Image 1 (tube, rainbow, N blue to C red):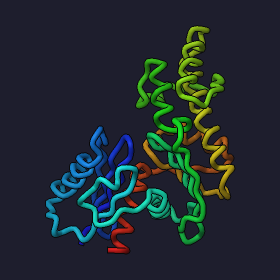
Image 2 (cartoon, one colour; image 1 turned 90 degrees about the horizontal axis):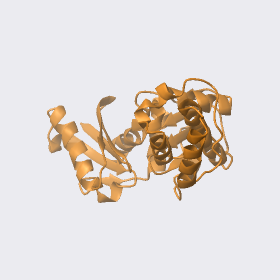
Image 3 (cartoon, rainbow, N blue to C red; image 1 turned 135 degrees about the vertical axis):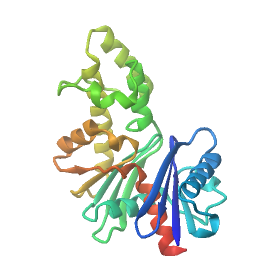
Length: 254
């Protein structure tokens, strides 16, 4: 039998089809209707793999839009699912840093992969993908071009944690002739500073996994490694950690 995990984030809806391993995965924009994007993700996984609803043993939904998924057999918090999915990706992981579209979180795991502590930043855009998107757009650049934009280690100082004030800072820096590369580096630094504040509130352990959409950025991953002075892991499936965890929970519980 197959199991499906759906992680409905503020920006992307991630789905994973699982049997004894990951069979397929899909990410779609969440858009304004998380219920519809969840259904579209589910239908894609079924149709792409020539499956019917009867072939699926269980579906677990997680993420901020989980309560809107009427097809889900169970809903589980994103902290639990990210912990489970992160441990699946690497059993040596003890700390997970997740930078999502509208929130960021750090999670501490024990040796069995259970969540023992976590803290979230979900009250403002600081340290989130939205902060990065807004500030990079101020440079008239796209977030997808971030790794090409940062060309050296020279970084401008972005002092404001507020996305609105940070945009004003960036406009002033551009007017002063500061390069886009330096400003982009400064933006990344400000995000990592915010993550460090979160990490200071939990028991930080080495073996760090970087998840979320921004985990595909080599520049951010490398800067995290430098600042934390430890290796930070990221994989092609890092963005799907929540959905992987949801699928695993479905397999264990349903």
